[in-house]
Image (cartoon, rainbow, N blue to C red; front, side, top):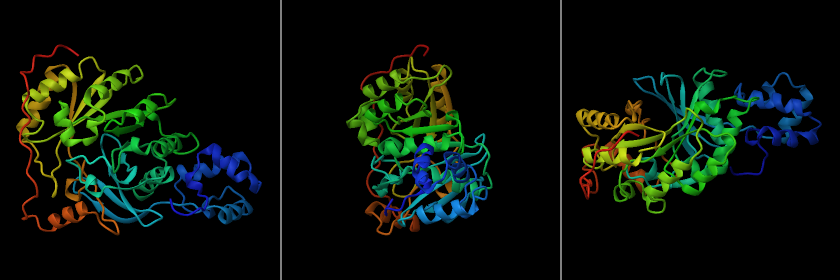
Length: 385
């Protein structure tokens, strides 16, 4: 975040207690301030009415209280809401509210853009502009709750918006501690899911955290050649190493790791792919979230037919895997998985291309869609996992 002004929205509770002490404000007041910001979603210290006027004036003179600004609101026909949020430096991100999923779910961004270059994701077209701060990540919860009339209500949070959470590890984990704090939003770790492509050093750090969210791994391929085509970082952290880290990941008794699998026509949706995926996850406490591709201008892939989607899910279930097929939400407002992208003040070439194609849908998509990935050997039946 540009500038040197101290920001109340950026502090964890213990740090806030330290910061306000020179103003003669006691630690119990820090808990009140924290509650006002993270549970009641106030945007001005003047609204903190259980603090004395003197304390409020001292805070206002010594600190900023930043909150992402709603620049635009998009409403889907299925009830999904997408917010275009402007940050303090003018950059913009997107956050999504998904109702009845089965509860209220907030999908948050952790970066402006993304550096992972996943081939099926519009956010990748932006490149990485910068990391978000902890306050900017946690601030999306406050803004969504306030905008949607959900202040003080329990919600689910998924870190599946713009960016790779583990590429912005420190700010992401600080933001999670802030929204889990009992004096703030007090969200249970069971209500929070972190989705990652699998940056192994950061995944190892996450495994050592005293309190951790649910883990979702973006897999999307059943061979290294296939996955590297879609997720380039697989060349650095290949499937065998990623799955070994998943097997070593500490899970509570009833928890499972979710493996997200974007299903792409003629790329990773074959019968052989389903058998290989079941074999890869054998012995893991896993569940598979099959996500039919959300096609978009500038993405050179297609969504499989409903029958192929159903076949893939049934094959996994036949191998005793827990399987769900994600229902796309917010596709009409480009709020579904892989569709988040915003225009910066200086759009990247990828942004300009995506926006150009969006305005002229009859233009042929650039590049050539990769053909089906053929298995190098016949897949063998998989036993119970």
